[in-house]
Image (cartoon, rainbow, N blue to C red):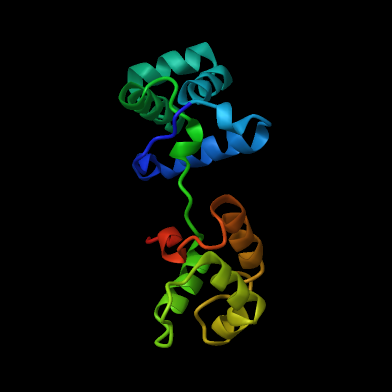
Length: 166
């Protein structure tokens, strides 16, 4: 199957992206899961009466996921790979760490995910907790999160591409 050449993940709601990511993480064949596979899963989880009511009244989040999936399938086709529709964003605390590194005056090279990981290992999160940029409980999971992003996108990926603006 051919991957989409455009960033289609930016057109997906956070809820649908999280659902797709969850299904991909539970599957041994994540690269073969399509949008239709995800839609079949969602409709299979919902009862027939619930699905019918949703289509009549459009009131529930699951219904909106079905509408969103239908629109994506119509636009990108039934064989579109679901993995292309997963948003990869840093959490808000990790976004603050990345933003701090990007705004550092002595940076000549663009900040990569590996540079962020090295800075976290070297104690940047503790410094940011001391400066009030991060809460004490926020720095506990940053290293695992950055390692997860590195596993998926490589150590040389530009960190600024993962900043979550909220």
